[in-house]
Length: 186
Image 1 (cartoon, one colour):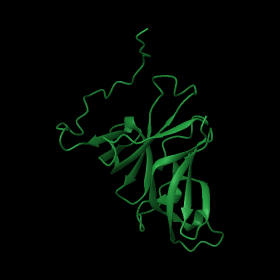
Image 2 (image 1 turned 135 degrees about the vertical axis):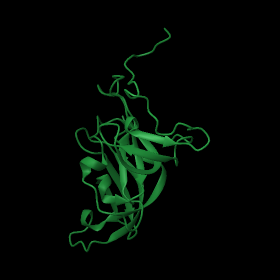
Image 3 (image 1 turned 90 degrees about the vertical axis):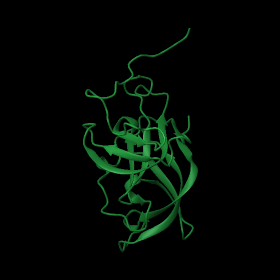
């Protein structure tokens, strides 16, 4: 039952100093993001090593940026779609999808809220939501074109794969069907 997990690949990021220092100056501190934690009812936490050697755990995703000069800090409810479902979390980096240009959608699943690159997905297991097909979704971490990081479910993302997605962003009227069945061969 992992509560803390490593990222598939560490990431070089910048941390807003207001999240890590008692006397912030508005600077962005270089860091290495190496892991996440899951606490039920809280946004997942980010574990980083700062350039001064200090480690900080359980930072909210909005404390991090993937560029040194990101645009305005988003509020956590806009940047992270939901809180952790439970203690048991996994991080998955599908090679085919990671790095693809990704269009992020608002909660209405129609209007566009930004674009970015897919980094990896977070998946909770062994809880009531994840065990229920209608509720089980990966939470993708996206490096937004504004320099900020976002965590969005796959049903609010459209991936652009140049060699395959001819009808990029053309979702049929009524949207994508959510899975409702548990499939079993026995």
